[in-house]
Image 1: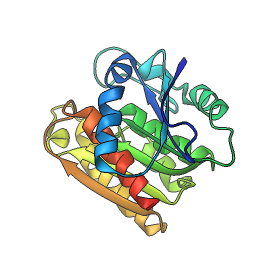
Image 2: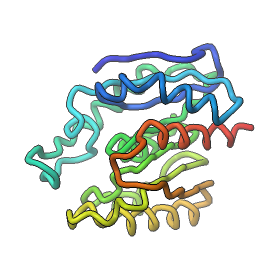
Image 3: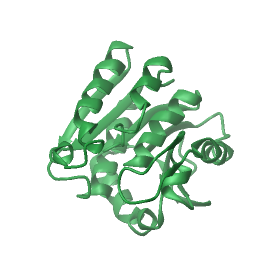
Image 4: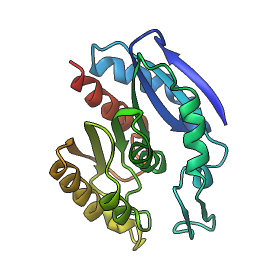
Length: 209
């Protein structure tokens, strides 16, 4: 794993995001879009994971798309994230796209480090994740959820559960008193990942206003 830093790291607000190589390539574009959506100053720390399915999955699970199983090494990734979030004077928000969005939700349940979660098109269809959420709620005050309006229309039976799962997540979080919103974006899972993530973080930054 490698750490990349962007924006104003002297800011009291730090965004934290797990990414792959593509996420690093589009990070400047994402940052520009966040700045266009908010007046809040912020820094961003990106953790580039080595293996997406292994490093961001909270527990092992069989492959649902392709042949690569999920390795269940999110705990190791969270330890790396915690190493770069040690300044107690900062407010940290964690977010991400797809499996990184799932990781962000899971991480907020495992630690009290994060003030909010920006989960853009998160993989909440992940096996047993809703059962987990019903036992361990996020330790934060705000959660942004989003999904593409075509994502639940996939032929993959496991991934087609994502719409029902994310609606249940919103109801669960709201019932727990967490400030939670669910935004529907046009398109499938592979459309506008950087913009969707930017909107997620910008919403959290708006909670600081």
